[in-house]
Image (cartoon, rainbow over all chains, first blue to last red; front, side, top):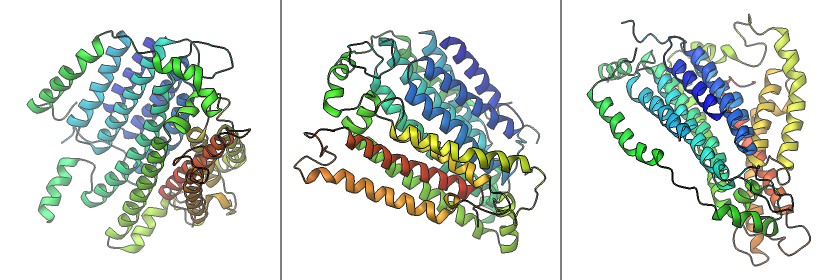
Length: 80
Length: 113
Length: 247
């Protein structure tokens, strides 16, 4: 079970860093936090699971969305 | 054993993102991925020696090692502080340079100053 | 896809692999002495049933104090850089227009196509429930999973909900930036006072003043509450200031 969750986290991490839209990357980071909170629950660490879920889905996603809102959303790296 | 090698791959993905991508937000994604990989590694290692959660209820039991969990609580909160500060710096550089691309911002700073 | 895969990045990758692979590929057994000692003595020495709380508030409480200082420095730095952002763009009217485009108060919002009534109603009603849950998690940290940090970040999420859910311009007192800063400074002062209260009875700094009375666990409850308030109001203030503030 932990191996399956780790493989899913790696797939989501690759999806985060290779994509032209930064907002999709932010949502993938939030999904990585959710899966690692589930992983901490399976590994019998309830305190770390509560902290990771609240921090990853709450505070971290809010400040990423703030940064993208005040600036641009696209990553035009391979185009010029 | 397989889990630790998977975590090594996750760490290398984050590290390669910081080094090789030009967009500043992608570099900050890489920082977060490295943070997540190290936290999962410590909690995984600590959970190998027991079977229950570390809440004592009077009778002797074999629970998991609580010491890595206590250290990782502090590490998670400090990770989000680092993300907030680096995002403020990235937005500041965007206002100066007009783009998130770090090579173009460096060129414009050299031209302007 | 990747922009700069050149010789130096490959060299750095190989160097990190050469350092980390021998550590992670071997199968050394994890030591069990800390777990055995804590299983026998943690509840007697600190009085808390949650061993993780006993560690970060009893045995390693200096790490917790350092972490609150790091939070303080991070919030100071972020707010300092944010206010400097506003003064770099030359035209102040344009700056005010940019910064408050996503503002929380209803009058200054430029584009409210996505801020429908649904968001305000739902978050305004759910906010107090999340705050109550945060206080519960914070105060029961010594008996069940929870504690200062966990309750603090849940309180921060509750504050963000309350700030998003103002209808018809009535803002909650908890989403006012000045009141959050006041609560945070009072919490930090209380942390210093509670930590030096052990000096009166002869224990060292961060020693437990209630150690030989009936309830030695009261010290842990008070420390949990103070740390939870500090962490919660810090992160709530950070999020609200980034969203444009409520004034």
